[in-house]
Length: 293
Image 1: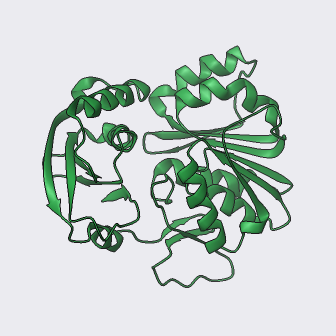
Image 2: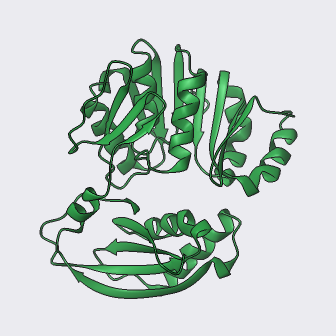
């Protein structure tokens, strides 16, 4: 089971739950769509029929039309057919602390020398490992998703210190990883979601690196400083739109993550249109890829 979760509201007597059954390849798209529709959290579970049930929790009853619209847009972004979504249902759920149940299933994740663990999990690491504590809130990036793991692996392999820029920081996990690897590095992280920035700041404080990272709401601007390593863990569509600016910002390595392997030809077209004919490395985890330029 995987999921993104919000802080628990003890005053909430029950939740409105939207359940969507999708093909496994559409899990990420469904999770993204439901969060965009206002869900406070999602959890996904593989069923016996090999479909994934994505459950989303709302404080207010969502409109079916809005859910369908967000699903349609997400399927378009992820280049999936509408048949990838099989059915959708709504029901109410008494507040039995689904957050606590979700916590039981989130275990520490090892990526190279990084150990990513929730704040409530007791874990000890040896001196050769780097421990990153994360409380997800409503932001993306707990270390469980392939795109986050790929980004962490790329940072460990290619970031050699100096300066680091994290675009679409989510929980702040990638900026925190860079700050822990190189305490003297200049780290900047941005996100268009104000809530994500607050969550990232809390996670940086949890990891005692808050003074090393500059967080800001927004995206790339004319005043954004270039960096030795730039990481954009977004979507293929978002990366394509930002590609010209991304290429002017990196002085050493550019890490592009959040791309499906089926979207590689799409990315090649945009890269070639920006004068880039090849990449240094393509890293892959399942159907997800990360490009290193």
